[in-house]
Length: 385
Image 1 (cartoon, rainbow, N blue to C red):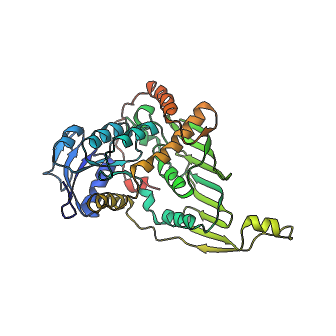
Image 2: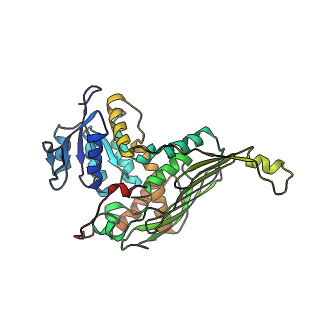
Image 3: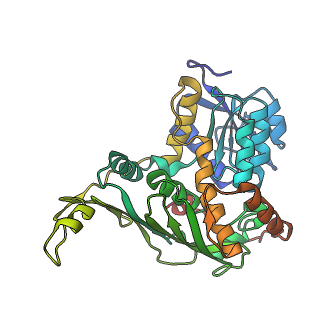
């Protein structure tokens, strides 16, 4: 087993596009870990890892004694089974997002998590984006006061038809448990609740296969209600080009506004609520100062999460994205789907057992698609927003 002086022996389960990118990060930008085993259905040649043992069954890798930890980068439908087995065997686990097809799966995994010494993390890499870190710091400091309204329009996740055609699992209930909300916007939903907190209810309107030949959602609009009475709006799409990425948080003392490029802090001279009650100026507003607080965003997000995972194993460093926090964004995504399916407002915390029953009905009518044999151009850097 790894110690603070020995490298963490890593097994990589899943050698698709994202798995291979994680391997590159470990080889070039991460310290304290070494890849000692690989797993995929078909043998895959990875530069620099020609001598590393390859397994076609994840259980053989986990049982091999060659690894202290696994990084799971397989299709979403496999996350629960593979992580469950690894946790039961006492290994440290880092899973690609989301933690499962549903909150119910995530909750079952957390029950399998054995102790604080067993590190269980999720690849919520946008938590390392300095811009979102800056927004969270401003909110945690109380700089803009109590939230009055939130609004995130995130429609620049455009995906062409070929993105779905070359995958058998993607954008199916059986393979992914959803589409836009479970795949692309899960990052935004995590950041949304990480900074603003979870709402107490969601009313959403999802469109299924509106822009693509798929069975799951590719557009969503959701209205959020917060415990203090504040309201929120979230809009997502994979069918718009050019898309929009705009995130505003309006507080009683000011506003944080991200326009997709710059982050601006607007600070009022006094609280809006106080000014409203005290002013005698019929058309007055509080004086406001404006400050560009955009940080340098040049950071390797995925490498930083992997490094943090290794540091947590070797040095007990606090996790950037503990697995249990992955339930929050998944609850939002699940609630938005449930609200659309049942045409009603859904309260949070989510009734995960009820959602699971509804999801399983959709899964029962779903099937994996036949992958199209198409030559495609793949630049993973273009996939991130």
